[in-house]
Image 1: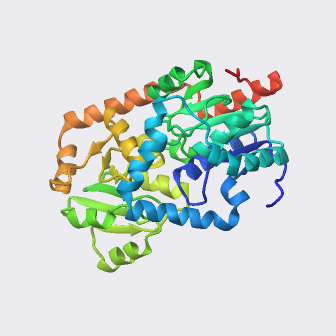
Image 2 (image 1 turned 60 degrees about the vertical axis):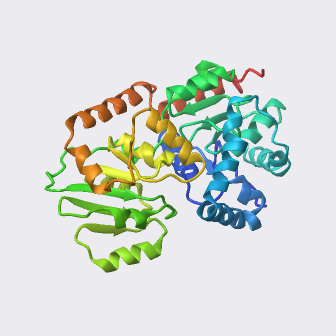
Length: 384
C-alpha cells in the first residue's frame, strides 16, 4: 500500500475501468484546477489502493456479469441498491469491513480538506466516518446517474451535486438540508462548454453512434439494422472493441466512419460539433455531454442496472427518443428530423432541464463551498 502524498483535495471514483465515475472525477479535477491551479489534488480508487492485486479481477468479473448474465445483474442491482432507496438506509457492514479503514487512512495521509465522491461506495464509507468524527474533511457527493441508489451516504455528507430537481427533492425528503444541495447536472469536462458557431452547412445528416467506452452494448446489431443511405453519415465510436473497429474499417463504407476510443476531450467535443444527433445508451456522462451540446439523443439499448433506471427517468423528463427495435431504425431517425413539432418539443424539454439548474457554474460552487468551509474551520454538517 503506497504512501499518499499531501493533497488539499481528493477525488474518489471506484474501480479502474474508464467508467462515468472516472469521467466525472476528471471533469471536477479540471474545474478544481481552474480555480486552484497551485493546489495539490489526487484521484484515488480505494479498491486498487487497498487491494491492488484483486482490482482487475473485480473489474473483469463485473464486466463479464453484465455481458453474459444481464438479467441476473439487473434483478440483484434493483433489489440491493435501488428499491431500498426509498427505505431507511442500513449500515453496509461487509463494505465497511473492507473499505472504511482504507478510506480513513487515505484521508489522514493526504490531509485533504475536501473530498469529492463520484461513486456511492466511498461516499457510504465517508458517511460513517464523518458521523463517527474520524474524518473532518468536507464531503461532497457528485451523482453520476439520474437517480440516487441506496448505497450513497447522506448523513455526514456536507454537500450534494445532483443532476435533476427531482433528485434534490428526494434528498430533502431523506432529511438533507436544502441549502446543501446544488442542481448542477452531471458535471462534464469544460471542453464541452464550447460551441463552434461557424459550422458548415451539411448536405446529409451526421449521426454519432456511441456504445460506451468499453465497447459493450449491441453496436454491431444496430448497424446491421440501420438502412444506410446517402441521406446520413454515421460515425461509430467503437470504444475498446477492436474487433468491431477492424470489421467496420475493412468494409470501407462511404457512409460509416469507425473510431477507436477517444482519449482527448477536445477531439470528442469537435465530434459532437460535427454531428446532428447521437444514438447511444443511457449512461449518465454520455447523456449529459449530449445535453450540454443540445444534441438529440436516440436510445437503442440499456445495460442492466443503472442504465435501465436512467432510461426510465430520462424518458419521464422527455429528454430522449427511445428507438423501437420492431420498426426500421433509420426511418425513425429521419421521421424525427422531418417533424418540426417533435424537434420543438425536445428542445423545450432540454430548456426546462437546464432552467432548473443553479445559475452559478460548477467551478464557482466548488470554490464557494471550499472557501466557506475554510472560514468556518470545518464541516458544515449537522449530525442528525
